Length: 139
Ligand SMILES: [Zn+2]
Image: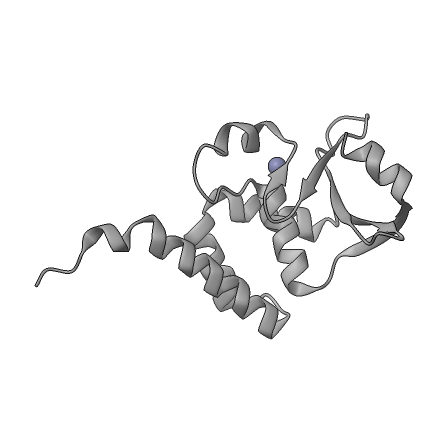
């Protein structure tokens, strides 16, 4: 019998992504092998996400006492005005790419990929905020 090509489409891509994140959680380190897989699976988005990690552009804001959290990702270092995107892993980012990409299943913009990597690595820079401030940020 011919292998079912449908099964090798987006579903296998999703499971590869899932496996990759599991591997990152286990190793707690972005090895050359993991970086290669990231580039294959996410292509240009991987480069953008790694740039965010390298430049510490994402901060995890943890609300107290609820312990809910979101990430603030610095949008650009070009403009003098600091702009942040709000990212709530695994499924929300306030950027335009995400807004248009969401029609595709399992879409990752570079911000969302970056914060997912930080979650898997357990290496996010954190800052405590109050629940009141948290509520204001997700409005
Ligand atoms: Zn985004």
